[in-house]
Image (tube, rainbow over all chains, first blue to last red; front, side, top):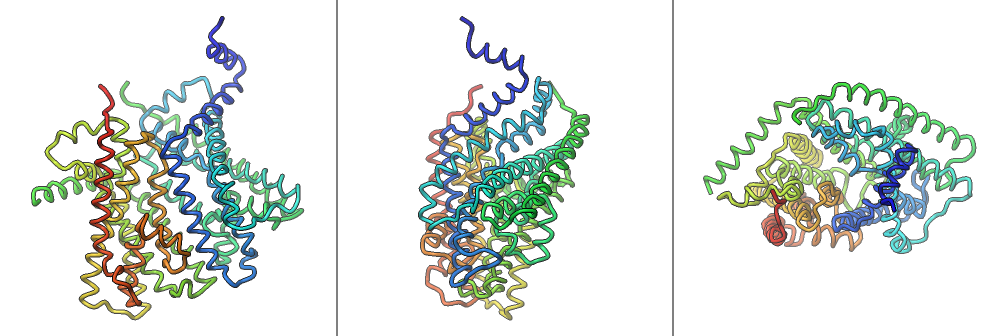
Length: 279
Length: 262
C-alpha cells in the first residue's frame, strides 16, 4: 500500500493548484497550534480593545452622533477592527523578510511553486487561523460590550465580505512590496514601522476616518489604506449604499490590481539583484 | 560597578557606530519611529477636537503624559534594546556562551544592541513636553526637575522590565516571531492618554498589571501641579521594583533553558 503522504504529494505535483491548497492547509494548522505566546498575544489584543472601548465611551458620553457614528455603531466598529486586525499575516511577512535577509529566499525561489502564490496561500491559511482564534475570543466578549449593530441588509453583508477580501489583499500586497526592499537594505524595520503608523491612522483602525480633521480624511480616502478597515466597516454599518458602494469597492479593486502589478514588477527587479553568499 | 559601566558604554557605542555604516537603514528607522509619534499625536489631538476637556485634562496638559511615554521608549531603545533579542537567542541556543562569561546575564543581553532610531522618540518626546510647558506657561521648580530626572530613570527601568518580561516568554514558548512582546509594549499607547479618561478596569490594568501609568500619568500629575496622591510622588521607585520582578521572571525562565544541541 503506498504511503498516503507520498501519494498526496504526487497528486499535488500533477495538479499544481493543489500545492497551494496544501500550503494553505498547512498554514492553518500552524496558526492553530495552541501556543502560550499566541494565546497571551490575543489576551493583550483584548486589553487594547478594552482601552479603546473605555476611551471612546468617554468621548461619546452624553452625545448623539459624532462623525456619522452613534455609540452602538462605534462600539461595533471597535469590535470589528479587533477582528479585521487578524487579516494581517504578520508572522508570514516577518518570515519572508528574514528569508530574504538570510538568503534562504534563494531556496524558496528554486521551489517548484510560484513565490507570490505560495506566499498568498500561506498568508490565507495564517489569516484563517488567526480570524478563528479572534472569533472564539469575541463570541463571549461581545455581549459584555452591549448590543451590537448588525448589517442592515443581505446586500450589505455580501458587500462587507467582498470588502474584507479586498482589505486582506491590500494588506498582503503592501507587505509583499516592502519585502522587495529587503534586497537593498540591512533590514526593513523602519519601512515596516512607517507603514504600520500610516496604516493604523489612514485605514481607520485607531479612529474612524470621519472623526479625523477633514483634510486628513480626504487624504485617507484617496489612498489604498482606506479600504483596509474604514471602507468594509462603513459597508457593514450600512453607511454606504447603491452607486457609492459599488464605486468604492471598484476603486479598492483598482488599488489591489495596481499594487499587484507593482509588486510583481518590483519583485522581478529585486530577485534579479539577489546575491546569496556562502553555501 | 565602574568596570561594568565602562564595558556598558563601550558596547553600546560600538553598536551605534556599527549602525552608522548602514545610513539608509538608520534614516528609514528614524522616519518610521517619527511617523509613529506623529500619528499618535494626530490621534490624540483628534480626540480632543471632539471633546476639549477629556477626563478633566486640556490638550496641552495631555501632551505631557504623551511626551513622557515617548521619552521612556527612546531611553529604553537607546540603553537596553538588546532585550528584544532574547527570543532569537533562546530559540537558537545562543545563551550558552553568555552563561559562562563573568558578567551578569541580563547585562550581556541588554548590551547586544542599541538603536539610533531612539533619537526620534527622544527628540519628539522632549519637544512635545517642552512645547506643552511653554503653552501652559509653567516653569519647573528645582524639586520638580529632580523628580523629573529620577522619574526618567525609573520610567526607563519600567519599559526595560516590560520588554524583559514579555520577551522571557521565549523560555516557555520558542516561537521567535511571536507578536506578544510588541503587543505588550503597544499597550503603553493607552497610557499616553490621561488615566482619568478610562473606566476603573483599564485604570487598574495600566497601574498594577502593566504599570505604564507610573511612566506617564502619575509623573505628569506631579509636573503639572495637579492634585496628587503620594503614589504619584513614588513613581520613580516603581522602576526598580518592576525591574526586580522582571529579573525574577527571567531567572525562573532560565531554569527551563536547554541549549539547542551541537
